[in-house]
Length: 215
Image 1 (cartoon, rainbow, N blue to C red):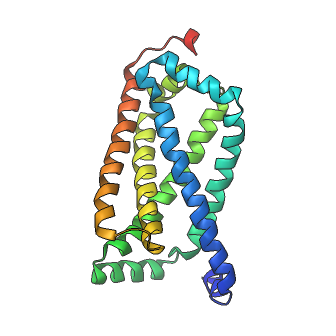
Image 2: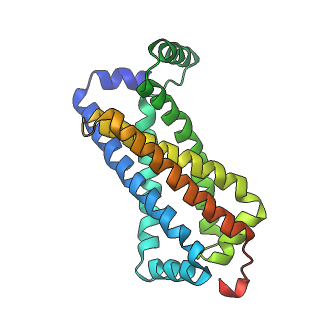
Image 3: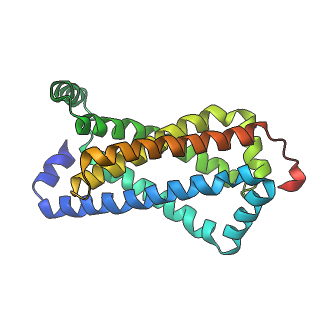
């Protein structure tokens, strides 16, 4: 509440934070989709997955990308949360207004807040697990999923893709870059497609036996 009052007195600061939220949001959106396609290479086989992983290490993409993404997550989370209704009274007002207006964009903001919190917690756990079992390999990834993290990744994939697609929708609508009705259906199909790809990847990891020697 104090931060909101401070920003109301400084339109220039608010504008800069909006641009920062936009930039980090687009960066994380691009990374998420790239990551989903990269990990799904396990569908083509263990060798394909390990080859892609080794190639990213060879060109230092992982060593540069992971710290950059961690920083982007922290910055985006802090900037995006500045307008969230954290007090109980604010939450009640938000729900009441959402019900009265019955508008897609209002509920979309609520979905953003909820999924954002879920992604923040689960992504931190995921990154910690990856760093603990470095380097990235098919065997360690399969062991993680088969060892009890399957439901963790189901929730993370759902929350991350919904958050990303709704976020992209809100960005494009806010900056008047797209037609709201036409683009909504495209995003729904894209969300279903990416979630489906993620679930298929999880199932391959879960049911495929990968000897440690192939890690």
